[in-house]
Image 1 (cartoon, rainbow, N blue to C red):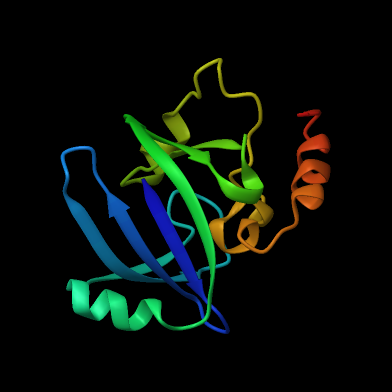
Image 2: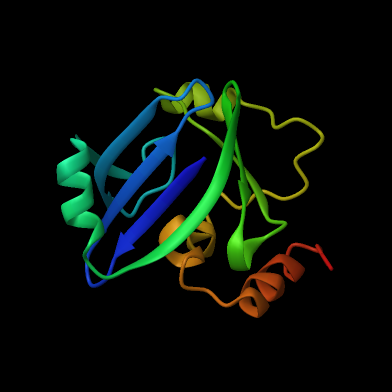
Length: 144
């Protein structure tokens, strides 16, 4: 289970990842877009936190997004909760542009949204459900 807190007025995301084995990972992430396409679309900086550091930062105003993540390499499959209940996104990560270009999505993938900034966590967390449904309709998807 992942709980992301997008800190209001910043490019910072506070993440709590709870694993099925009882482990927990706490981190602060900054994502800075590079304005280009390809495997490396931005710069990401992670800072791993102690529980006390996490709790302090979690007291700041934030928009919250929750999801469960499964790993089917090279895909991470996110099943969203809350106002995004029913949305499932898969994200592939690669170390080189060549690996990314060679990737063929499995047939279960019904829409490619990689280059659509509306489907980033920072946008989804603030988007009303009606907007997300409209965005999906642009891809020919009409969820209930």
